[in-house]
Length: 396
Ligand SMILES: Cc1ncc(COP(=O)(O)O)c(C=O)c1O
Image 1: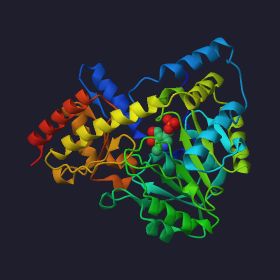
Image 2: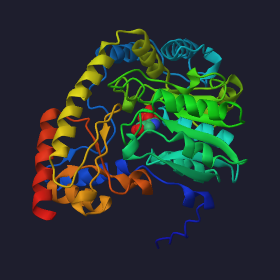
Image 3: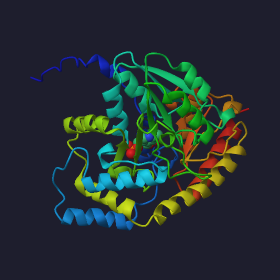
Image 4: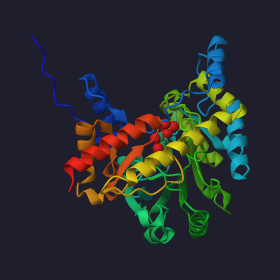
């Protein structure tokens, strides 16, 4: 006799956990492919390049040399040192290796710092549209998620006045992300400085997601940690995924005051134990080795950005700003008179192009689609043709 399964009684907090739809759309796109459809993937946020050979070789060597064991929860000392040196030099600040925690990808830094800092009903400000895991994690830990807007008419830069107006006695953390997913916007130095000034005197921390900091097309990356009093108040999230085309390796890190770093390491002890040692040695080779692979990736993205922005602007009902960083475009599609979700669905099912609805990044993403241009110029051109064909047949 077969046993009947009892009802699954999940903990209440699970009802507050969100998701990242890029992965869901990827699964659906792959299912369509399995049924024989030809799909062009512009949904997932990962560089399509291979990791540079010297990085792969460092990992292979580490495995051959016996790096197959547990290691320290906060990361290997030599990698923490290299990260402290690299992140500090690029931002013009002094970082101690004790302020670095290495994690499997940059994402756990979001998870761990929010878990470590945000209590029930504490308020956290986050960008909307923005990376969906911010809101998910804030709500999961019982915090109050307070969105601030990123608007097309400001080139998707933050409006610091709006952020400062939304601070209350309960605000614990402000999340910023520059260059920004999904819009490709980059915070201007003036806005970052204004935010730093507004926060410097207050007991509020900043989670600064700088995972795209090496993928900027004009000017230099500015980090809020460069402004007086802010290094101590900021957790930098960064990693190897986007910079060195290492998404599948799962290697990232956080930089934060040493007392918080110890707590985040404790969360590592309680969850992953440690990040894989051979992966960390690959990261060390990435930081210490030739950086031309990063330049090549950025220049190729720059070429693709021109193609996709120009192409989208030719499609009736689309209007696409030129993003200054990352590898996403966020065209306004209100001229098509379709909702973002309906349009993204139709483009996937009927035109064979996978992209994301702006609403996958929060409700203020309505009216926009997100395309990741981590695909060849040839495929981008083909995708543009397909979308244009679909729009001309189906929109007024
Ligand atoms: C804004 C942002 N932060 C963090 C991450 C996570 O990066 P990782 O793959 O290193 O966990 C991503 C990945 O898409 C991202 O877009």
